[in-house]
Length: 466
Ligand SMILES: O=C(O)CCC(=O)C(=O)O
Ligand SMILES: [Fe+2]
Image 1 (cartoon, helix red, strand yellow):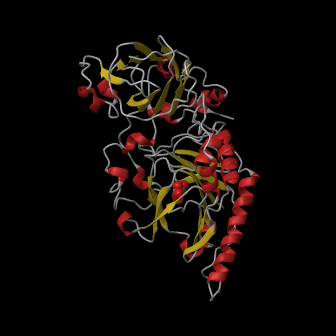
Image 2 (cartoon, rainbow, N blue to C red):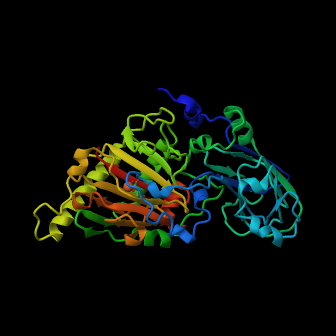
Image 3 (tube, helix red, strand yellow):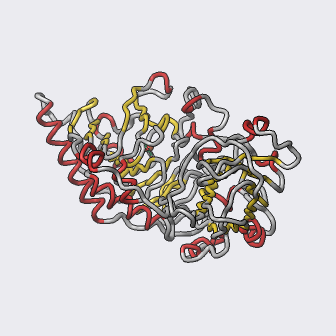
């Protein structure tokens, strides 16, 4: 199989050998996690809250994801400094606490240059956002034991440093405060390796968008189990079928936690393999605000066509796991009987035809991910003419899902899709405009996150028949 210029990617799952390793040099025993993202989050900066208002009325006819364009391609890195209060100090900027706060969370590549410092004491967990383009990052004020930080999986680079002192989990997202002056340094091996591979063109959008992407966060040292109460509550959610409009059905809480865990695990595994997750881009270079994995056939955002291989790297899409297809079949039957009982005049016109999926597009949205209103119309004419349904599984964080007969966000209806929800749109609703306006942070079922270590964000699978 030709992997073109991206041949290294496959090896990286096994390979990508040195890409994105982060080395922490420091002096004591704290954990640090560095999470770098060159993904959809960047494109959302500057938007209003939750991205409302973007892309309004701008959907052009053909682009499937037409309003997902984003020009801000700054890469963003998030530093999780566990058990320590830190502050971000740009080189050359006074360490006066307050003056640095604005830098945190909004630092962009050009501002940071080659170095970036964090300083603080060892009290709280903190999260910093900064540019991943910086060649060196130093953390001051923490006693860190430098483990290693592997950018195992690209666009969102995970680096987990263990708190050897207390053996506690370190994920936290508090604001940064200041203080002490102990130091640790973080330097990005990724930069050096990327430089080698790309001849110095670091952080080029190609390079970063093709980095392997792991749906899982690295396991923390200590994983807190959700209480039995939480688990009980999450299990008690009732399954309910709703006919939203002719041809469109919502199966609320349809996927059990076990199904969701199975799906997440399979997507994670497939997403790390050949043809795995990447951040797709349009012909003009703009990146979509999500990570994508195609199963069965590859959908190409540059041509809006399906193919047997992915043009950007020559990889073949993995097959759709049989367990997925079985679930899809079940949901279609379920919807058909729901429609049949709901509709007195069952003349077939409001129904949802059966289909056997040979395409699945798996999208992963971080909390700032989104997807502009579009129609799914790149399947065969026959498939669309027959109204073969698109079947959509939502897993993880909840999302505002827009749908309607017209293009504008303001003309669309909205439904919140939660983890386990399934939406089908076929028949008379096959050509609806639809999209994802926003993701609700931290709304994924705790038990799912605990059982899978799924990253914060939302996983969506849409099944279709070509
Ligand atoms: O994430 C979703 O709910 C929708 C995804 C979608 O419309 C697509 O991939 O075409
Ligand atoms: Fe779609």
